[in-house]
Length: 178
Image 1 (cartoon, helix red, strand yellow):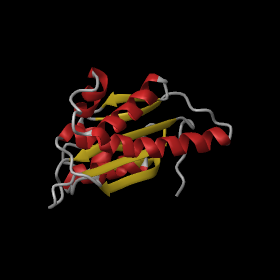
Image 2 (image 1 turned 90 degrees about the horizontal axis):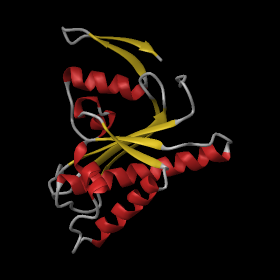
Image 3 (image 1 turned 120 degrees about the horizontal axis):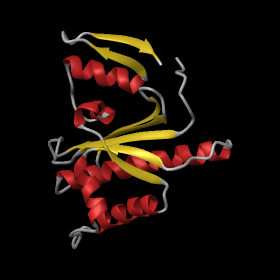
Image 4 (image 1 turned 60 degrees about the vertical axis):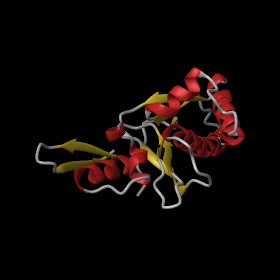
């Protein structure tokens, strides 16, 4: 099924589940797609992180970098096809967003995090990316990092697939394709 987007402008979402795995590693999740009423995503990331993050913010920064790689790939592909991209929003939760906005923080013994921070900060400073806060209940990347059930699973799944969603008080969902 191909869903019709409003435009060919990119949008993305990223999140991490801190220390989710038995070995203490976190899990990254994210998606890249086109702007639409409820977004039409085409690229997905859901993977165990390759290193142990020392905080939830560090795990989110690792996830944002992973999604940033996917955004860069999509941007280059669309640019080659003649659809120039402006600033691509990455919808995120607050923790790593504050780290990036406030400065380098304390990366004394975490060179890998420092490199990730500066790569992401450079893309933001060049106007290629923009981090935008979205509450966790609305962040589509949540479905790619956590085991969800019930209405939240149904809601985020439909949002991920780009279906318009109308929630009822009973938790039932009416859907229409965008």
